Length: 455
Image 1 (cartoon, helix red, strand yellow):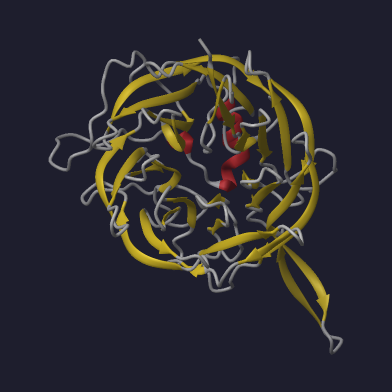
Image 2: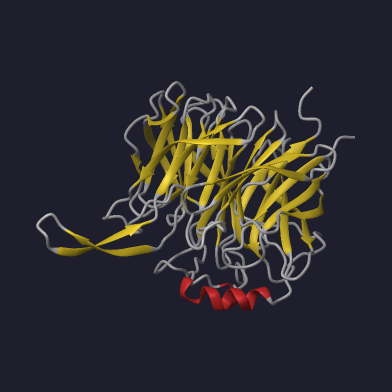
């Protein structure tokens, strides 16, 4: 019987250790078995899988390239997959030429790799001389870009052939651009890029003759300070959906051949009456945010991950197949801390959610199913989050050290869902023990690899 392997990228900006988790996934019952921790020097973020060439592409989301004394941005790696064992062999490593590469994807031809670089939040003040000879100051940020890399015939990463710079808006809350996704439409003609810094959604295509990125139209200006983060396309109809990091809702759009978006509706991801805690984060008054996003293969259901301070959950939406409008049908608690990424299993029977941190097992045996939150239920809806999970950036260095000396474990939550109704229930919790300090899952979807890949 062939094996299915799962790769979980691990991100250690605040807690934990870096690396790639290799797991064996049982498609019959959803069980996951930890095999190994790979590439433990990398702060892994997004993964992209080339099934034809058996290659896994991974971003190293860092601000400072180890090849430089300071700066240099993040890195992109390519690994050859051993189909028999799932283990990886590095075949390529290139600089992203920008800090914090947040998302990578392959174009449908397999000839190019697209990278959305989130960049950093930090600014530099420079003394500049004006044309009249007087002096003043200028505040500048690291570049925030969308990059286009060529791929060689063997799948190794070739030249960086084009860069599109996002500049941000002075009137925006965050001030600087932060491209955060690069999702291809089902036809493969163009891809969407959500910029959570300037509140715009961009549509790009590749000019294959010129090897250039081309903006198809004026970017869609989303709600002010909503921070669009991830997006998904309907697999068969001209519908497009985006979530937001600061506005806790999901928006539905219709798109045309030119990439223009027309808003259909926006629905809150957290039910009315749910006690919404405030997070002690780097943004004043920050509330729980939205993270990973997935759509079912038939386009009927959207799964949206919510995180932060006890509000860790999956919000499920049903898509009207005639109008594209969405309606929430379920709000399901995730028994982990700081839920980040999600992925549907290859057969669509399971939803897998990764959590950034975990302090204690709520249900280590997996014997208890998860119930949707109901306003009339008695008692607290969620346990209070430990104060040590604060992500205030001014306290980052001290708290990171404190966290790393504690005994913790990686926590994967696997959820079974009913494909006819789109609703979910808890299937299994799995603690994945390793040396102290342990690895924690990253916000990006898991990459699945089934052997054999093709006939």
